[in-house]
Image (tube, rainbow, N blue to C red; front, side, top):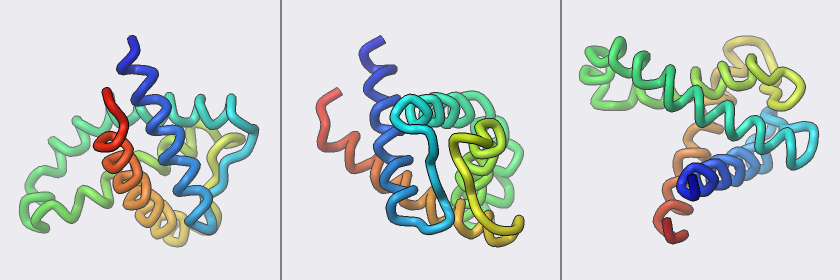
Length: 120
């Protein structure tokens, strides 16, 4: 249970940093909404992402793993779609996709660094 809350906090901080650094990605509703967005993002990554990664394994292999950025961006876009009043990605589909790719890179970097620094 402690590990679950730890991962939730890391996801929340990573989402907040991404929203702070990437213009076009915004989080509304305060800390409660941020924690909800982090929980939904964690569930999307835990339940849907493995299936999508398995289905896209050939293209991921061909692109030497770079297609993972596309999968991560789609998971962030799905989170924004599930919480429309909490996570907002601006622009049309192409612009929002590019924003989601940039945000997913930031989220990956921040969550990796926090997982290294903070004790489990």
